[in-house]
Length: 451
Ligand SMILES: [Zn+2]
Image (cartoon, rainbow, N blue to C red; front, side):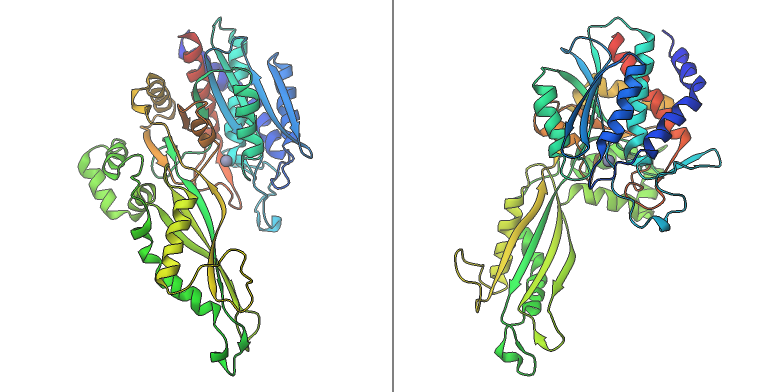
């Protein structure tokens, strides 16, 4: 079939698609608490109306994961994945249009919580299934949608649960997976993401001795202790095993330079625009940022306790334990003992390092050998009328679960919207972007099923 017939079909249903997408935005699924069941019910009705098999898996209070598929066999599947939850909107009066309004501005933009992250991608994936079902392609292959909850919190009850209990348990074999998160990096074109960083959140606690601050030498100031440790943070690198980034900086630079008309233009922009350099630096270094600090109880008391929280963004192979161990060395360099197990904390001067939360980075090693990723890129470039580029991502998504459980290492991120908009007030998406992504997802699935 001619690609143009599918494109015309999509264009002729523009208003229906926008309405379906708006309905998803208007369906509240703020996480916490989640309420993904509200979205799952809408998706289920949509699939039932289109004669597409769909199953909802409830969990917790009004929460759910969902799976849908267009054909019967599961030996070769293209897996589409999106999450149904959104982050909460924050103070609603700061929004120009209510976060659940799905307000359309100048016939060009749709506003609301979850527009970019990621109900546009999710709606487009569901719509692509509707179109493919209608085309009634005879194929031994399958297109499967795995819509999950819990992505904005841990992903354990959503992505991970679905991989273990549905996709693996039912022997659904995926050749390729697309996660529909926004990968627009304005002013750059959209990226095709083949790996992403993990994160480690660490709490540093210093414990001194409280005293009246008129005789401060009686105490041990926990804020000064924290300050000493902060001064020594530069030594961290000495204690961390050397783990290289999955794609070295020079190669990332070369991949990025392909979207520029020539090397000179790229070098000029690269040298003039700090954003590009910072982006590449974030992708090729273990970043760290001390983001919270709290200490002291009163203006005339030497503080007994101080706590700081650091956010590290890691490569695959860098673990929370490695960072914890390195920080413990830094504490020793600063001249403080570590908290000893079982020892009473009163009258004991020490520092303590705790991992609060972590997730591993992930990377699809063999992406350069894949014909499917090339096919995807060529369709994306045709539909967006712009070059695209392969890259890594500084933040984590459910893609890590598909890759790191070895369920489907060949997982990419590619979706509508600008990657700087998720979680912001006045989150929005361009309708044109939404229409184009429907075409990309549909044509790619069409090509996969008919090959
Ligand atoms: Zn997201």
